[in-house]
Image 1 (cartoon, rainbow, N blue to C red):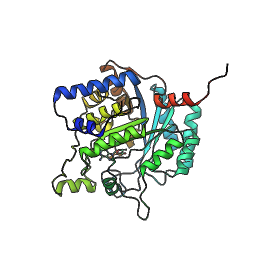
Image 2 (cartoon, rainbow, N blue to C red):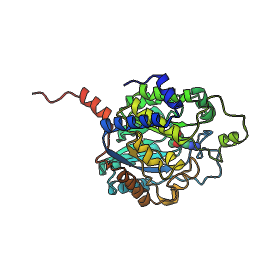
Image 3 (tube, rainbow, N blue to C red):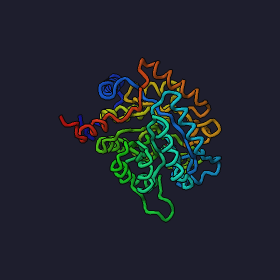
Image 4 (cartoon, rainbow, N blue to C red):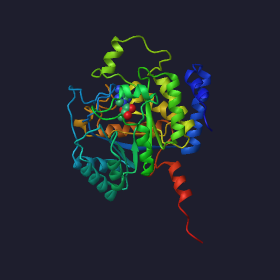
Length: 361
Ligand code: 5AD
């Protein structure tokens, strides 16, 4: 089923409880029918909080001098992958800021080791990288790449996410195309409620999910970080723009449910940002309104508090074992099952099956 702009926008404007219940039910039904009852757990390793960008919303932006920076060693990353295996996960996600000193040949070596020595799928979330780097990581065995386009209001994005000094603006859509050509499973997504973002912008985001036919879609509310220009601007600036989208839970659930309807077979996580605005019910409601993935944080204790893209990030005071237990309890509380195996993209598996010729009779 293809959604139109008007349908999406009217859901985003809907505030009638029973009508919204029908949206949640439909998203849950499509989720069950298309990707089943399994909730896939992805072990998250935040491998470096260095970043040489200056995104106005993000706490690990390069100009933030209040942050203690760290970079995990290859041995720590390799050990994190072992922990993911020990906890029964099928995927490890390596996430970092755009850290120019994160040596890609070293990283490729770790990816190769993880791929040779464990059954894990490897997902990368390393921001904007060159085509050569993305190709090298893919050759090393990385399976998936997450790169949110953040908002399809490109003018707003360029303002909030400026290029490095002297660089031309990069277009994340071009990189998403490159990732697809390199045969990564491709994930993208947006923040909800960025200052200057309207409900019409969010409706266009959902249309773009549909058009890109994404394998993975991450959606979370924007959470102001005090050491960012956007936080300062929010405190002092003019009233919100006409039609400003609110950075709240309800709008986030609507976006997740609509993402499920737009891309029925996508893997959709219930995100940490959502758990941050509602630690108790957020993850459960996310999973009941379209999501089928959780990403327990396995970043070692000395580092995880420092990966502060926004304040009071859910789970930053937990140990890996606690994060893993919380995720497990959430899945069981819903009467769902923990996913077995890697939890690959159903859509991509079907596409491969369609293009790879079967054995001849
Ligand atoms: N609030 C919520 N999400 C944020 N991200 C970055 N900064 C914030 C913030 N202040 C999200 C972006 C990025 C992902 C890794 O984290 O969408 O792609």
